[in-house]
Length: 339
Image 1 (cartoon, helix red, strand yellow):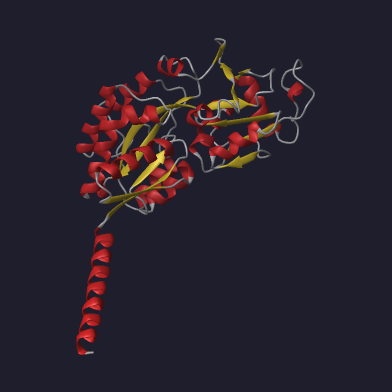
Image 2 (cartoon, rainbow, N blue to C red; image 1 turned 180 degrees about the vertical axis):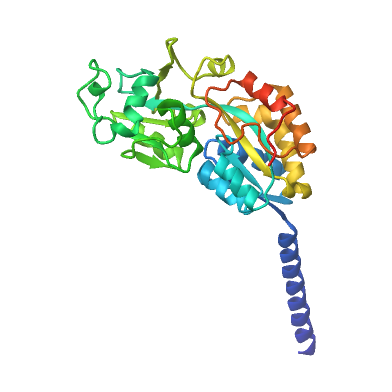
């Protein structure tokens, strides 16, 4: 009986010891917190998965979606280490970060082709001008412009159904400025979502649907939706690797970013993660169905990161109409907007 009691005590001791070891390992696991843009999400999530494998799960990387605006709110409060952004940081966000003493390192990671899409049954508006898109999306259109033939008399006398990114999204910010001419200036009577897949499904399920979202979501759903060729005065141009790289898909080509909390770079896992991101960016950006920057751009970004070059080259202003070459020239210049 005494021997049995001793064995029970030994078993209990072993279990407690094992439990303590598990808790210790879990608590020792480093965590990187990332949030923000749904457009940048596929890239960063791919990088995070590969990084965790490379680190044999010694580091946990959480990647969430709350839109660029929502991500910057958390970032400037110091709640996350890195924010995914489908546009440059805005002036009010720079101020918020400054007020909270959060310094940031700006890193462009790729280019996106913001894609306007219609239902495959739509055979009439597969090419649209900026003026036509503006007539649909501008605030004055709300409740008044509701049918295709109000945009073009040759189009059907049928009501269209609109789908777009929510107001916290960098995609919404970029689209409204590029198409309407003013950031966040839009009609409000459309179906909005921070989830691009919801927007894709909306357009796919409605013959008269029209929406906009990141290129990766279009590529994944080419059998469900049709990309609209954008006529910016030079004929209809479809989004593609060629048209983004040569700068002809305008004004809906755009740089996308990660912003890193400068203080967080003191943690070895943050430094290792960003280095891993830059070294593998070309391959992983392609894997995420977006457009990588030239190799020299990632080398330059890595140099800026290692030197902790804080601030932004955009001065709180968006980058509508910027080409890849123009972005590289801008990021490589000596002048830099500190704060």
